[in-house]
Image 1: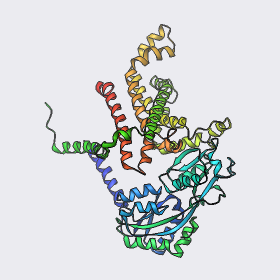
Image 2: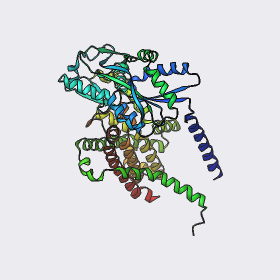
Image 3: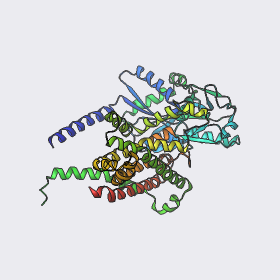
Image 4: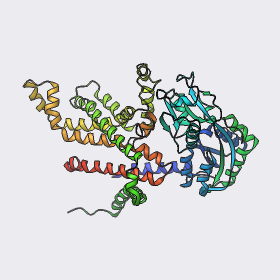
Length: 243
Length: 259
């Protein structure tokens, strides 16, 4: 009993110590960002930290819908960036103030290096013998892709629906899939090729301060920084087009 | 007479039970019972249920086929380096399933260690129902091996020795003496392996992907439903809860009851 109590006491104490480290100390920002914008937001965050010594910015990325769900459920985060304004609108109850568009990105047809599947256009995504992945229709790159394919009158032969643009591009980068449609911002940092396709849709990335933020001033200045020329340069280096 | 139990112990035990039960209560409270039937009979949910049952039963059969011989050899100390083998077998039990799925992808993916050779023969494993079965077998096999090994160890080895003096070979001893005597332990292991296979998520999405009817099992469907409709997700959760309950009831009859 003594040993058990001692051991569980130690375990509990160390768990509490870990939790305490995770708490927001006022000069820490937690940013939830659409996975496709992660690279640019990461660069902007590092610049922001340099410009504001003592500040740390932690980034959590995922599919926009999952991030919105987390934000609405009260996740301890300060800033939300989604891959389209509609998802941001879903988060209205969790957002303080008006969202600001900080970047844009276009959908691209992405294939592995060397294009082993010989994909030359959207119509090749209908071929059963090619491995095609798309983002799941619950996230922006998914419904944008399905709309684009629909507009081109292509019924895709999908092999897997991935939870985010980053996941879809990863399948292609690993060579497991022959083609996907994803935001250019995701594509920039991956070892893949892009097949030029005319008239693919673009999306806007709105950023907003969350209601639950305990550092809303700092969060506000981070959002303003993202929307500034300087922040735009960092986002552009990560593959986002200017707002 | 039971000895007097200090209040503190009671409180901690009660907290443990509440901690395990309350989340399930919260899930049950959110289920849209009014439209339950329509939601339960939605084609996508039925497809996920069918796929989950089919793949999990297949992977349980695979676990039995591969796991029983291994467990028997381990129990009869017939393998070299048994501790090492047992350690390697238990590894997937503690390895996070996502890591297991990544490992499977790097082995059997188109550019994987073995997958490259397979795809030369036109065989692609990821994104197929076979990949789901393999992911489930990977995480479930350790449960079966551990349970079956324990069951075999509980069988008096001298019975097998007697059978051998009467001319029985190893296959006969295994099939006619040890497996029948260890059957309830093996069955419990198979049930645990099946439960683990039904609940498999991380390795499945990583290795097999997610496509309704092909690779989207119930847990994967639940995760996707969460992105659009909480009520739909709770219905999938209810189905999984029902399957888990069936496992618990079966285990009570066969395993817990005999303890």
